[in-house]
Length: 587
Ligand code: ADP
Ligand code: MG
Image 1 (tube, helix red, strand yellow):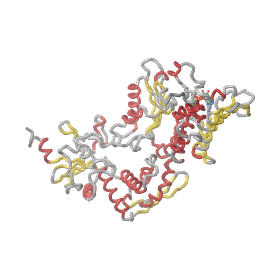
Image 2 (cartoon, rainbow, N blue to C red):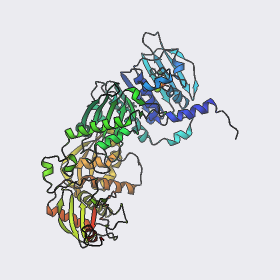
Image 3 (cartoon, rainbow, N blue to C red):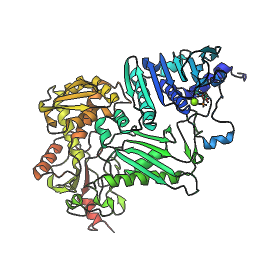
Image 4 (tube, rainbow, N blue to C red):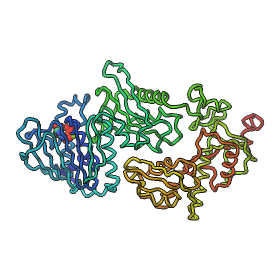
């Protein structure tokens, strides 16, 4: 095919594709513009999850009528003049692309008025075609109305997710911006339904509650740190909230970073945060965080990606170290020393370390080393000689005791077994629950006093959809309105567990896979609840409890892994012990 120049329409649709991917991207660009214009109050109205309508009204500086046409053209911006300016950007926008992009894939009307002008003005852009600028009465500020997003790009339309998902993305975006700009009033409405409204009084706690639910928000720890810039520029500041080690998620989705007022994703900052929790959380668990970094604009490159969601730091190591130390320090200041890993804290003293009889320095996520090499669990290195027998059953075990309040030690005919009590209990609960479920009779036990659990709005919606599945598992849960639920009965297996923890466990990870097969949902739910309610590491068990756990585990169909696939036990064979002690074959 011959080479041809793309028509401007096609070229602008291609460019738009990089910026406007879904309704939430429109919302993002429009609220960034409003914030750049100094808005103190910002109202977002959507219909049909933003497909039909997204309107953003602000009380910012506005645009004069003679600049309105320019504002909607590509590469027109008031925020940047020279290429040099790119390296000290203090506004959210700078590419001059957003309005043009939106106008090329939707029907957009922009109405704006500046202070002390006689009238406002309005312009309409439809599929990239600009109308004329008309004079019209309007209050100071700007209203951008975007209708029928992607009406002329059917391929894009097909890639949109369900309304629930698209709406959730908008919700999440707005709540996070509200958190980053607590002095600005934000309102999000769909029809008569106001899903978010903030006071703009600078108080972040109430916004955190909207994002994470009241219970979690109350427990978050505040971080406030500052470090001089060695090259005499502005100091780096880190403020925000992180979860205590007891509040975790199974993924990083609840970790949010803003850099100079910009929400950034995929940053090394997330890794720095996770590092700060090293050894404090179980493997595969992640903290929640909403962190705000202020750094000299000279130190960051914001021009990395058309959607402006990524940044690069001039001195990445320095900021990484700063964030990690600041959060670690914050955690240590608040958090009690976890009993299972006293030595991780450089000989921390206190109650919790004394209950461990020997110097038990093995943390959850550390590997036991023998002869300098890691002694791995069978699933990780199938070729080593100290692995479990291949039959799925485990031999009868003689209990020796518990160590570190975390592991059971037992002797089998072929050596020593170390059993992770949490993983083992998870497995036991899971198999019992699934067996009862398969026989369609899960005994359930009414709570003496029903428990009311409040969830963040998005999780509440999810849970509402899963109430019947919960019913199959012996939970009796009723929608109580305003994102709260009443738990009246729980499966007998879990009597004594914390019902609210169980509910939370059920909803927290359901974001990605919205409609897995029913059968899969049930298994997943069961695994999740079992994990949450299983006995934890660090919990001292009586010898009866230890023995019961061991017997239950022996009776499991797949005793060697927890329902999530982690090993429940490590086996040190007689053969291996003999080699290690030089009794055999060590020539
Ligand atoms: P950018 O934000 O990168 O400059 P946009 O296409 O988003 O590019 O906007 C183009 C210009 O229109 C902005 O530079 C700004 O001058 C003006 N503008 C856009 N939205 C608003 C608003 N809500 N209030 C005032 N001016 C606005
Ligand atoms: Mg912009």
